[in-house]
Amino acid sequence: MLPIDLNEKFALFTDYWHPRIVGELNGQLVKIAKGLGTLPMHHHAAEDEMFLIHKGELTLKFADDTAVTIGAGQFYIVPRGVDHQPIAEQEVEIVLFEPATTAHTGNVVVAETRTRLVTI
Image (cartoon, rainbow, N blue to C red; front, side):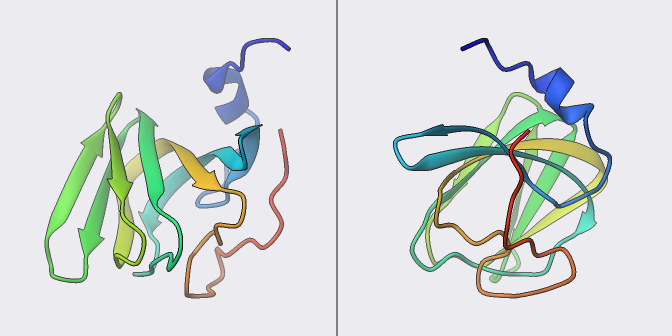
């Protein structure tokens, strides 16, 4: 197996909020996605969700009106059951570590929701 080059993988697509699978380990998927704009507030009832920022900046707004901003080289773990809303004022590149069972947009279904993810 060769090392995964995130720059190469991110260059393969231009759409937003549609994760691609780039790896798998111990029942966890390593996904990448680009973001721009806002996803709806949602939660994942049974899974924690880790956001690692490759490039750019992502804000996670929470139901209690607090927020955290994550920059390149930083990560944040949203605990299971916590409502969160990803917001990207400018394009952001995100690496996600999640159980394979994690639904893309958690407990909501919107235009950006993907039920089948592709591996690149």
